[in-house]
Length: 366
Ligand code: TRP
Image 1 (spheres, rainbow, N blue to C red):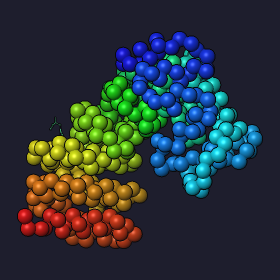
Image 2 (tube, rainbow, N blue to C red):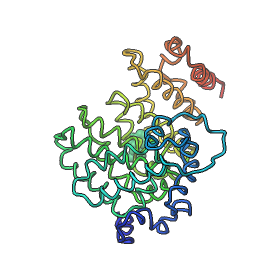
Image 3 (tube, helix red, strand yellow):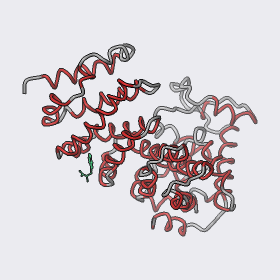
Image 4 (tube, rainbow, N blue to C red):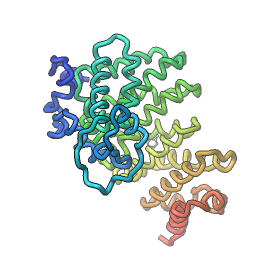
């Protein structure tokens, strides 16, 4: 945590104008250092694939602006139009609110509200991650929130309140992990390792499930972008066995998310080589994928389709390795070969195609 500490000591000017300074230490580029609202809006179009915001093109809606910006998220209607004025009332209001809550987080003893309020701003304020990462005192506070619950992990005695609080802090980390400007500095800080104790918990009660889910969310944000650097780091932390255990033992969204992380790692060349390096690793992955397939056969659920998609894509990718492909001839779960999932895949032609490709490729003469 030397980085965060150095960062904190690098700036002791506490007024809000300085909240996202000290960028030079982290090698962020120029667009992050300008913190007037036009710079913030201007750079927001780059790193947020998927959820294009309309900030720049919002009609001026006066005091309702912030609210409207929120309800419009996800609509991609303005994608094609050029950005004109980048300043409007709703942006300014959101900026001010964010800076206010950041100040509150750092300078008030009760940061409960500020943690959750900042989390709520993340949809409207696309550069929240940059502001948080570069603001004096924020990272140490997030870290404090994380380590404060360690004593409650084992034996399991984590109350819902504490879990919510730390999960709010983790959602802020997710903003930092998903922003293109802060992703690598965040990775290099090794702060991610502080989340591993949460991934290691096995209690199935809600506070723990929520904690695992928000921790996986941070890792999911990292693997979303194809970055070999992210994969190198994650592999060195033995994330695969951790995820495999979560896939095997939990249900619900964290199972799907852990499987997604394994898939994203496999899709990287280095990740595939890593998993196929020893038979034990390959076999461990196959074993967990097989368990998922069997669970899907025995007790279909809401998330079945998504789980099945990920499983099929994992197997399809494993078959890119010659030795793995050879083994899969013998050990690919029967349910994937015999049409068990044909009804489920009726609406999912893409996945059906991948499954057919997989079966074809493992049956090919070598
Ligand atoms: N250290 C173990 C290894 O390198 C980590 C591990 C356990 C693992 N189970 C795994 C890695 C399954 C990949 C897949 O093998």
